Image 1 (cartoon, rainbow, N blue to C red):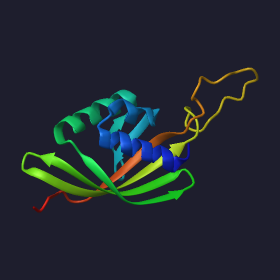
Image 2 (cartoon, rainbow, N blue to C red):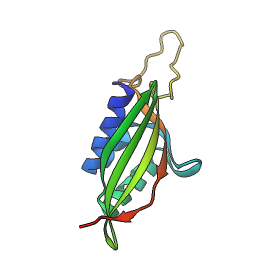
Image 3 (tube, helix red, strand yellow):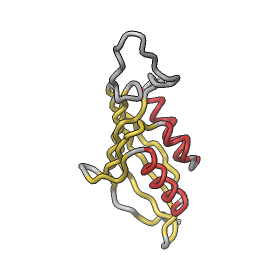
Length: 140
């Protein structure tokens, strides 16, 4: 799976509010940051908790406006509609996804005779940084 395909699978899971499918796209120690360096979640359990709460509270739906792929870096410009206490709102954001080959963040075991578990060489998202725009009410 290419970095772009992996990030698309993550976006599809996000829009389906499928927490488990979304978490599977991430490295077990993956990190979510609000740009540049405010840690939002680290590891599968924290991602699972964060995304389950987000899906339940705001029922977000993201539309991909543009995607740039440069090697293992995928940059998405998205528009997210979500429920707020004041009604339907929209926010634009830029998401920077760092994709790593294999479950160990790109490092592969080199010991003779060692075998990786199935899927261990599959790419995963190692780090995601989000630059959030202003949240605005959706015009009727």
